[in-house]
Length: 381
Image (cartoon, rainbow, N blue to C red; front, side, top):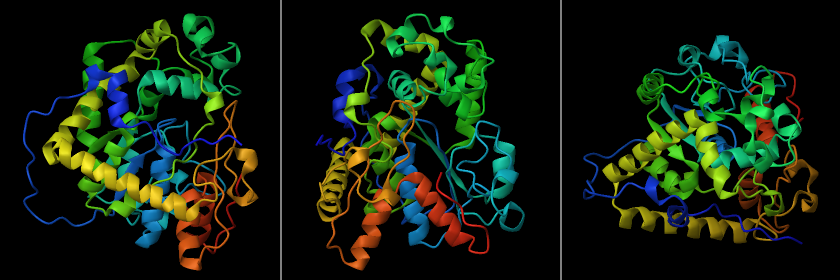
């Protein structure tokens, strides 16, 4: 049995890979001036292959804990109209629940004018980005069978050696092959590189989104999110969702790591800009000692829950998942890992553990059927 530890790369490890993207702390910690109240109106732009499924699981659990109302995909749809630009009609019961939704987080292509029509005026907007080189490799494996540009090449290095030989911007699913984060934010992923245009887009995003997290610093992101939203530590505890088996990871050669920054130049500018703002926000709220003390607490609590909940105390290969209702969706050439629960859990612990490991499609269906009992049941596809 392959044993893969359920742990995202730490920020300290990532700094050794991309040290130039780290912002040196220049100021001291400034304590908050007043006691905060938990924020419960939240819109999360769920970008692709950025650990966003793990964040959605966190939001789902928070919504159940506080009996909140979710803006869920209508009918039996798994997402909110993606890759079309978001329209309010993609949300179940949008006419009766407009401005009464608390949480929105399923995949969509961002459309500010439409989103603001159904979310409260005081909604907190956030998203997450990932280094384009890591994102493209992950997308290549995950979407290998549906992206024309990927299907025509043998592996990600061959694709990057001559991307225009495989890429046709008119083919729909090729959105995953070039500047996919830029696309998810609602912009043209095939736009020409223009500094004025890029600055215009970055300014627009800054004006709408209160926080952009960085997947490469996931634990740091969870601590910052907890702090900004005034949530408890247990609210951001996670088991990694939608994670691939290590056997599916392809390694980019050094030349192609550089090429990604050119091929996905818009994503690279997006990532650079908000990586800096991410560290600036942390700098404003806490010092490094405080940050990593919080991370230690997060990881200890995570390990405690893994020991309590999981039969193997880690993620396992999909074929080893015993409960068919907890099997994760498999896509492309990726082998998505899952979990087995221990058998002797009491009801309260079982409920907590089940929600920690429940795959996205199953959890979405569960929440839909609970929130709309009068509707035809949403099925897991």
